[in-house]
Length: 83
Image 1: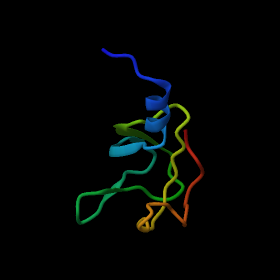
Image 2: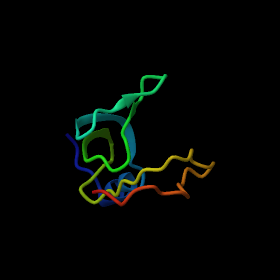
Image 3: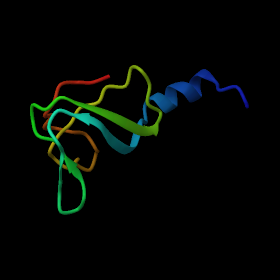
Image 4: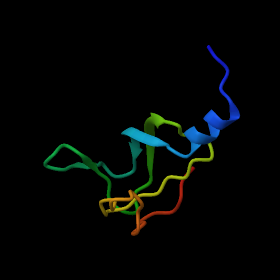
């Protein structure tokens, strides 16, 4: 395995990607949408496992019910920040 330069590490930190989510625990049973997507009720305590790349212990995750705009930034954040 090669050694990564500091520049490579800093570049990767700017581009985290989430490729999948699994509900590992939920106080209330998740509902499945018509498309088979788990929907968790607001106020329910859950444990989620995120799968992706360039995620670190300092990556902040928030949830929204709005599709991203062209610049892919969320304008209606619906949750607290999670690490």
